[in-house]
Amino acid sequence: MKKSIFVKVLTILSAAVLLIASFAGCAGNESGTSNSTASTADKADSSTADVVYRTLDEIKSSGKIKIGVFSDKNPFGYVDENGEYQGYDVYFANRLVKDLGVDVEFVSTEAASRVEFLETGKVDVVLANFTVTDERAEKVDFALPYMNVALGVVSPDSRVIKSLDELKADDEVIVITGTTAETYLTEKYPNIKLQKYDTYANAKTALENGQAAAWANDNTEVIAYALQNKGYTVGIPELGSKDTIAPAVSKGNKTLLDWINSEIEALGKENFFHADYEATLTGTYGSDYEEKLVVEGGKVN
Image 1: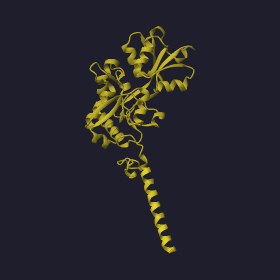
Image 2: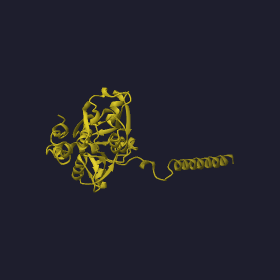
Image 3: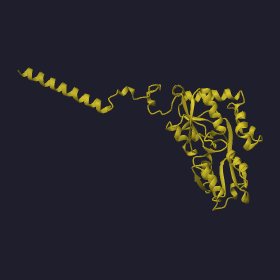
Image 4: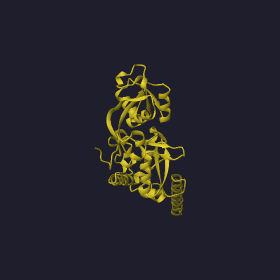
């Protein structure tokens, strides 16, 4: 009799344990799907569950690539009167798209958003006059370069700034948030007062309204601005170190990075980037700057 009662108690306890385990399993996965499907299926390492980028094969399968470009930085990336993206970076982007065999979705970005757009998977590639720096390389992966660049400073003809030492205590310098100019001046000249803007359009307006003594940015940008707008001179054509411009992809997206690098090398054999310059930049810079600015096939002179 006692043995029968003991067996019944064990049976009841076993059933209770199974029931609790069943509820725990449901609580751990409310969607009812297996936890084994939670990680990204086609990423080799299960630790990449939080990866947001699309591999080269995924982009090809989707039939479309998303490329971050500027929409207000003529002549590198801008929207023309017909609503079409144009410029040096866009010319390159269109060739990438053609050779990849997919459609393109251009995504307008600001300078400060370039890293974020890659980290969140909003774009697959950034082609937005992106200067390569060690700090940025910790967050994104840069491909081979396709352009040389340095910092420059443009100011009104009424008071051309030829050295940062000429700035007075109450003078302010315009910079674009998230650019190398902002970083450089903050680190090297912390006493200089900065006016920070998110867009190039607002920076130009501020300069034209006399709100600052000068505007510091990529020398390609300020040279273009001075050539296109009378009354302004690039008093400092090169400031700091010489750097390069390159495409960027999300950190760890090796398949896409490798393909872009191979593409840049292949395009170099046909002098593609010189053709790009002549199609998009000659009207602004003339031929004098071509050899100084163009990097062909990823090989910096």
